[in-house]
Length: 131
DNA sequence: ACCGTGACGGCGA
DNA sequence: TTCGCCGCCACGG
Image 1: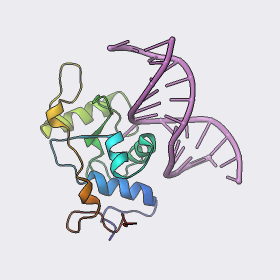
Image 2 (image 1 turned 90 degrees about the vertical axis):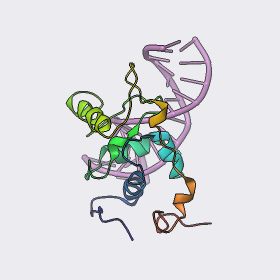
Image 3 (image 1 turned 90 degrees about the horizontal axis):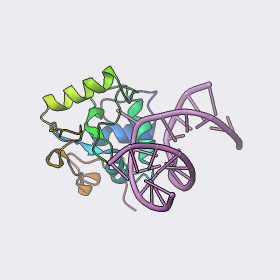
Image 4 (image 1 turned 135 degrees about the vertical axis):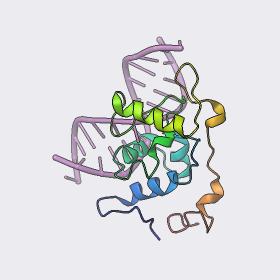
């Protein structure tokens, strides 16, 4: 089953990205690179592009994805300005901790459980086939 | 079918 | 540490 947040304009790749980020709990974030790894995609940049076009924000929590150095990254197609402030506010409201350099604290970083790719209840089995 | 773009990341200077 | 470059790859035009 494709998630309820599908839309005809959304590509299969985008759908996989959006399904995956819904596994991230509030108060935690993952990096574009880790998300790419989870999706077995070799381009974090490509993942970034999918998030950049997320038509379901913030219900599909693309704000919970930050850069590899734990700096804020982008939001709503922007990498600076009001949209970014909104991303920061959303994250702080969810309990994500930032240090004085504007980086997310290590304690707020979430790690994808690889098994979720094959799980049944919360997993993404329709999207990840073995073999 | 091709090409430029980009919410990335790693590496060397 | 901060840059500049380059490899990465999905997408829209």
